[in-house]
Image (tube, rainbow, N blue to C red; front, side, top):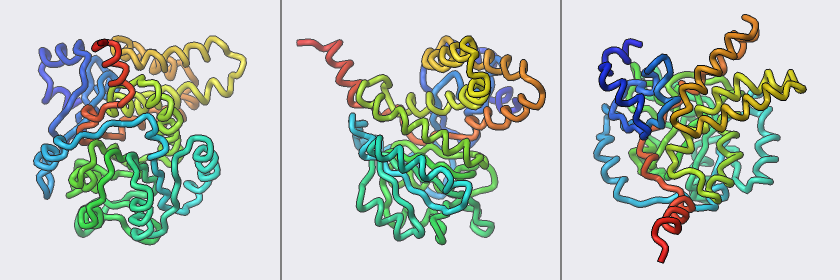
Length: 337
């Protein structure tokens, strides 16, 4: 609320509220948390940030990287690599599901117990889309964030020294890009090395929620890339993350009340409505009303998980990363010869 009141005038709030466009914000603040009409801005709009302050000049890196064209092919799922960097029980319980999904979905999974194994996996597969599923942490001495890679710490320095370049990155780990009291968050390292878009986290995320979030991305990626449903990566990743708000609220209740066809229909319709800019405020407020209609115990249990979509942040220019199929459809419809 403090950020909202200090950053946005009433005039600008009204302008943004009615403008159906993606937002690029040059800031280190959690711009996604700004609320207009009591709805988080990242629920109504697709938002990406360019980090304002860093040891290295992120704006310069962004300008250079923007000159290199990259489009998402219709076989992006086969160029997707999921790195599993921890053997903690809370993570391992999902592995059987992930490997079964990989067989059907054609994406690649590697379990890495060290930085060297991580580097070898990248060199072997050369992914277009990289998901890293592990623990995140902050070095108390350097104030830099890192990822656990087995027994090693995957650091900003390791990524930049090895020039690890992957166009699209999703970091499923705790606090990999906090905007307070840290320097050189690891998410920025990928951006510096040429990544077009990095999805990271402001705060600690719960293992089950975080895993289900990127499973949702993987589940739909092959279909949307082949059908051209989304124009660019920012649009797709933002849709996936805001949808988790509805999934965490409705899915457990729908599963419990299996015969409630009305509730199932409402749930399905709200998820579809998140695709429509003019409906998103209604969707958010409808979900909140439903949450409040539950018992206090049910509501509190779901609330902590539902709002975790706010913990994620996109950095870079995912708005410039176009889906190849979308562009083909667009050109066919508008430039017929």
